[in-house]
Amino acid sequence: MIRLCALAAAAVSILAQYAIWFYAPVEETMGEVQKIFYTHMPMAWWSLVSFVVVFVASILYLAKRRDVYARLAGAAAELGVLMSGLALATGMCWAKPIWGVWWTWDPRLTTTLVMWFVYAAYLLLRASDVGGQRKDTVLAVLGIVAFLDVPLVFISARYWRSIHPAVLGSQGGGMEPEMWLAMAANLVAMGLLWLALLAARTKQLAAGAAVTALLRHGASRN
Amino acid sequence: MLGAALAVARKDLKLALSGAQGLVQTVLLGLLLIFIMSLSREPGEMSPPLAAAAIFWLATAFGQILVFNFLYGLEEAEGARLGLLLSPAPTQSVWLGKAVAGWVLLFCCQLVFAPAAVAFLGQSVAGSVGLGLLVVAAVDWGLCALGSLLGALSVGRSSRESLLTVILFPLLVPALLAGIRLLETVISGRGLEAVGAWTGTVVAFDAVFTAAALILFPFLYTGEE
Image (cartoon, rainbow over the protein chains, first blue to last red):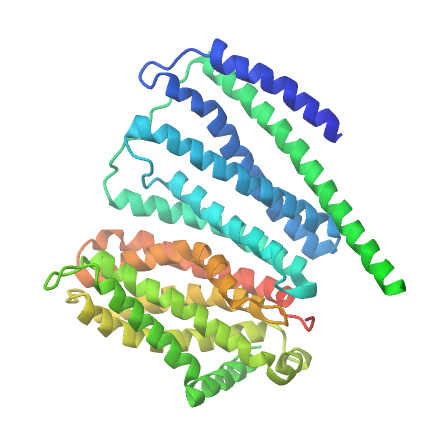
């Protein structure tokens, strides 16, 4: 399954890159810079999906106490932090030439940044020894709480800005059909890559846990 | 549940106020933060009300970490946590008791922070003080509901208190934004039209995390090490 996903991701990525550079037209006002969008948007999208996976897997872990859910949540959180981090970075590269600033107060930007912080802390906690035997439970609770926070962050960030006049308008919609198609191709390519990475990382974490268990078992026997 | 929660809160408050250790550290840290932040303005100049409100809530957020580390640290001595868990009261009453105790302690600290912010940051309060207290109390409940839930992270043998800051602060962003904006309204006495929306945010934050804590706390607060 992992290999199949990875191969499909590679094949679709080639098509998607072709679509970016040769199929989709160059945007009139933004020029070549707008091509970042085709990478930026899928990453932002799939990072959000990762956080949903963390949320659902955390609930399932608390309900069923099966280790596979804890590992799935961990793998999804790693991917989510990676992709939202890259989405933020590519977003900044796009914002600088178009808006003239690296960063501005926008509900979506702020929410993504806060989510990045929250899930980076989640990973930090995951790597530490906090919670001892209860670590997976602690992480599951955090995974749920973190996701509950997302709509609140978005709403408060929007209010914050609506009171201050918007310095920069949103960068209007109105994309050509070719652009939509290129975007869809990139969304699918990134999705397949995401799925392959998620499955591989979950499997790897399971293998790691099995090795640790074997080592401990061996140590206790000797 | 309420009776047990009040008993926990009363016990914690007695311990906190008799030794005064936890509270003094929190107050000192907050005062230091407000003082250091006051260096950002030129002598004789006033800080904008928004900046003053932000510094006030920053001091509160740091204070909250210390308060909840202290409150949960109390139960680690002599296996008191096991005693609490073995008592016939529901586990949620521990959460509620600690949240209430933390709320009272945090409010006491803020009673010191507020005049300090006025003095060091050159503020004059134009709005109603009663409204200000109400705003602070409402936002504090949200902070304490979440603080009491995640404060339970720092129990057990392998706890790292500093981690709580990194985990808690980003989650508090909605409550802090609302608190900053509402307090700015109180200090400057203008911009009242936005109060409704922000009050809604605070109420939503309080409700969501109170409900989440009631469900999730028993998973977090157990006898395991």
